Length: 180
Ligand SMILES: [Zn+2]
Ligand SMILES: [Zn+2]
Image 1 (spheres, rainbow, N blue to C red):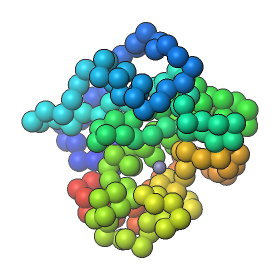
Image 2 (cartoon, rainbow, N blue to C red):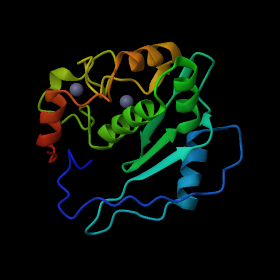
Image 3 (tube, protein in one colour):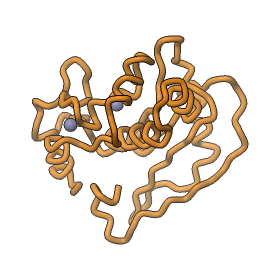
């Protein structure tokens, strides 16, 4: 966030531990009601606030083959399915922090309007026509899928030796939307 956003007054992270919500998995209604109960900070006149929930359960959309590591919803909210991230990483010998950072950075990219979320990108042609709202440049953070086939996600993480960054086209789009 510090690298890509103009925030001269700084970025503050407020961490809160909440009691583990009940249930074996979360659907979007569960995720929203947990946010409504526990979110403490919203946008105001001078500050933008982003809420990120690290979930102790998986998404209710998961199947034996398909998983969701995280998703961005509403305009300032993200859920990270931490339990799923740990499972995918552990069972494939992938670094957990790498998996978590890639997922989190990708979802932040969506909150910042990538790729072409409001049909306003200056580089319209880099939106993947097979996978809308994502980038067609394979090395780009916004190419990575945080929802998809379990083994495809694992193999794309295994190919990354470091957390992927945005490719130059996504960076230029972000700059055109006010980022840096
Ligand atoms: Zn995505
Ligand atoms: Zn890109």
